[in-house]
Length: 280
Ligand code: PDD
Image 1 (tube, protein in one colour):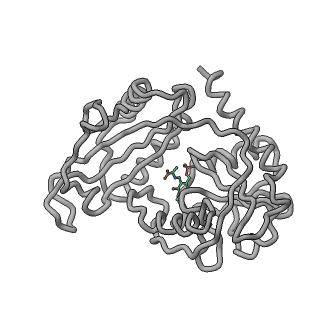
Image 2 (tube, protein in one colour):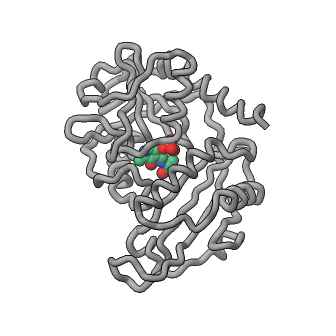
């Protein structure tokens, strides 16, 4: 695997950073995950905009211009194998003597890697559990500080489920690494953007695509009780696309199989990906 680190493309084994890097010491950094289909980055503008927002939130200026980012990302995809790839990029506040204060001279660390993204065939769905959302109040920042998310995800995995659905003050927020949609009375509902969820690029695309297809959908708060009456539940992310949850806390959702609205939206999503190739 070839990765990018601070201006250089090099084999993964050769990529080294200081143990004093604030990413390592404090998780002081942000990241993005961008899918690339057949060498073409999907929804790149939206991912770079969210990166800019995350950097602004942690008061770190973007070390690269948009043109430089595109050049790096495209070069890295070309250097790695896989028709479809998942690109991971991370920026930290860089190496400095350990001190909670921001260092005076910041030389951010920029790291990018790309791995093969297995194409997602129509799925049989996944199991999930609900968990109390133990994360902080800045979940809109795509922070590399993911300890709460990984502990929550692990709770799900330990009991044979795949994702943890996070509940804050009686309302459904999102998954440990995904956004959520529930279908209630034939309307797809996803929580509005706030400090308590990551503004998912896939989430936005699904809303846009459903509106264009005149399928009923809306952004609204989801009281936890709606999980009991939902006929479908989906989780969404750049790498997983749209996955139906067929069992929640050991209880079947709908028929216990991927729902009809899910399969319609899944088709539409695949068409959007195809459009990438026609828009050249
Ligand atoms: N995670 N919410 C959280 C907490 C996430 O970590 C993610 C994605 C999403 C979905 O966002 P998007 O549709 O833009 O991928 C929502 C990535 C994939 C990850 O951490 O690997």
